[in-house]
Amino acid sequence: MATTNVKAYGAAAPDADLKQIDIVRREVTAKDIEIDILYCGVCHSDLHTARNDWGGTVYPAVPGHEIVGKVTKVGNEVTKLKVGDYAAVGCLVDSCRTCSSCRQDLEQFCLGGMVGTYNGKDKHLGTQTFGGYSEKVIVNEHFVLKVPANLDLAATAPLLCAGITTWSPLRHWKVGKGSKVAVVGLGGLGHMAIKLAHALGAEVTLFSRTPGKEKDALELGADAVVISTDENQIKAVAGKFDLIIDTVPSVHDINPYVGTLTINGTLVLVGYLGGLEPILNTVPLILGRKSVAGSLIGGIAETQEMLDFCGEHNIVSEIEIIKIQDINEAYERMLKSDVHYRFVIDMASLKN
Ligand code: NAP
Ligand code: ZN
Image (cartoon, rainbow, N blue to C red; front, top):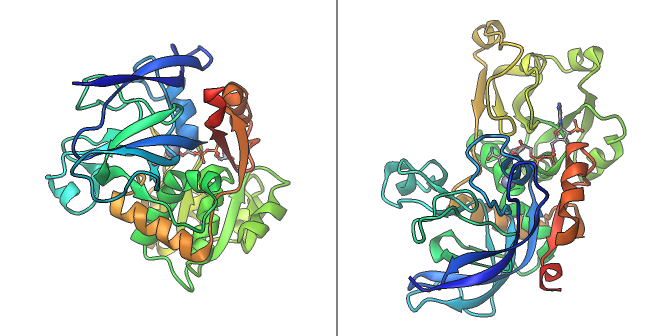
């Protein structure tokens, strides 16, 4: 298959800094779109993957799944976009398209295995997939999204992961006017959860460990802030929430949050992957028909729905633009929760 060399930024090992490397990408095939990457958001999952926090990272690893760019080439069967259009790519670049999940527009749960934008298994080249910290990307048109014309391009990039990951549970659990939603953690996902839940008409509360984020949370659309380390503040919201979206990236005690769910309420974990500690107490679940659930990004149709909603409501991410050369420092700041509220890489810096 015809391939081309592309400049990228990647990690060679779990403890290695990211630096400039060359990667191989396929040339466009009939249904492919080639995108010159303008901006790429920095998700905590990028850091987890670069440092092999979840195991299974294949090196070199090129992260990045919040991609916005311009179409530079299309295959001869492409109908979705044309050369010169703006385009976006999120966390998925392939799936079987025929299983029951794919047929329900739930490509993220493809029974044949969805292909992640990075560290996935590239069905064309047989290598790992390489993400958006690169000059360009070639993706089947089904997995390419349209960008609403009125939105700032750089600030749109984080919608492709942080946006859809929080939109999907808000929609699945039918959040709307009158819903009471809480968000745990004010980072990339958390700040999008607040904006989207607020725009859907919900009353929104932020649980944060970090005093000092209250003013920002209220400006983002939260109605209240609860400092999660203060037992009295948690007790004051007992039995209140219909839905809690928990974005915390590491192991933590979810029992106090379960106590703040209403009867039939759901706590959905989108951040931490793995065993919970301390153990989850089932008593409040059983006595209140409460649920603890998980959710993974969202399907392609749902991602387009979220982008269109953001276009209509003028919603984008709060961003700090960085150069690709600053990515290692950005990861260190992310580990200290010092992000307001998403880093976005100006990919022109890779061309310098
Ligand atoms: P982020 O920007 O680093 O934000 C995480 C926030 O969680 C922090 O700002 C902090 O908020 C809070 N936090 C951090 N460490 C904590 C700890 N030890 N205990 C309690 N709270 C803590 O990260 P992100 O990009 O939003 O990603 C969050 C997680 O979601 C990551 O694990 C990422 O891999 C995962 N993710 C999942 C999906 C999915 O499909 N399910 C998609 C994308 C990302 P406060 O300072 O306010 O407490
Ligand atoms: Zn992500």
